[in-house]
Image (cartoon, rainbow, N blue to C red; front, side):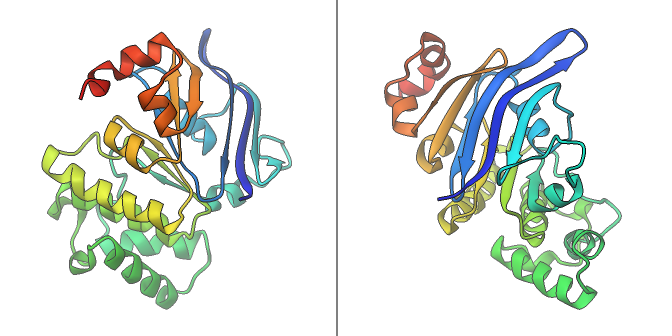
Length: 245
């Protein structure tokens, strides 16, 4: 397995507030890395730094060996290879489901409309949204919106998919349908970095779990190591309710 992303000594400050401190991690091709931790631990900020929605304050982010933070690096290339699924879907309200999936392919990848539409229909079918191609986002449920958002990200043929708490804005009935799509993606070999509060998913689907606390990665290990034998008291405390099941 080749290394896709490697992070070295990453820091992020907001003013005088150091939110991420000396983050070091790597992600290999085909891995599903979940990042868990309490609210405010830095999980989403780390994800937003990885895809450059936030500018890191220090350190390196290597994509296939090249530091994307170097001034000469083509960030558009990197952004075109890394997909992002947000907690609030970020669909274009005035576009149909199909148009949401087509747009980026034409503008960023330079695909023809015909090719973009074919690929969009294929990926919408893979998330069971093929019957809603002409619907606007306001006409479908939260779970359906998130499945469209995943299909849209897949249409860009990403090297790695980032998920920022993809189920946190959903009602309990629709959480399962989104997690099922993500499980299927993981089985297909898609490289994924997932910030989540869904502990069952972290335990059952991940190849690795990172536990973050107060801006640092406190533990990095296999799901078995983290969920059955955490090294730190803070990890044990965070997982206590889950470990009691």
